[in-house]
Length: 160
Image 1: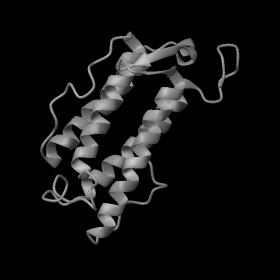
Image 2: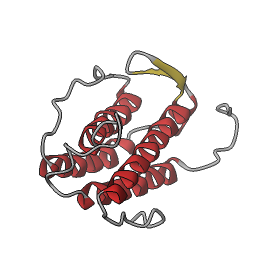
Image 3: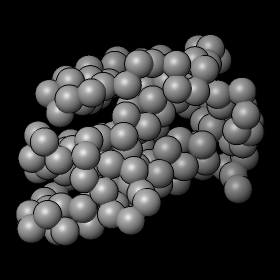
Image 4: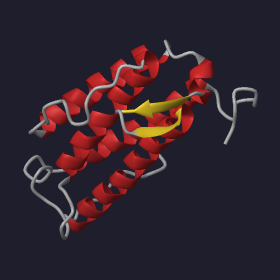
């Protein structure tokens, strides 16, 4: 763990760029799903990738907004998207919103201990990294689903 006197390991702008790179790749995974499979196909008892995409949408922009303003939406407050087109539209809106709000977060804020969504307490930078890790984990599920559908997923190293 770092404190406010430690030099940053990554700049705040590089952290956003890294996250947005992952979001770009996750968007391509969403695009790869056939329209009729995004909300219906799953493996075993796991959720559909459409449901997972909704979870990621409920986390990203509200996390950035909460870090910037210390105002937190209730978890799951937004109505879920129900079509691939709507998921992609919201994904793009969220991406733009994150870019817009991020610039208002002062660098010292990333070292503060906060409580996100009224229940997750930790250093801001660690909570943001959790959001990125959560997306990567769920995108892996999307890769499994695509392969099970006979669809080659996008290369994981291409994030732009």
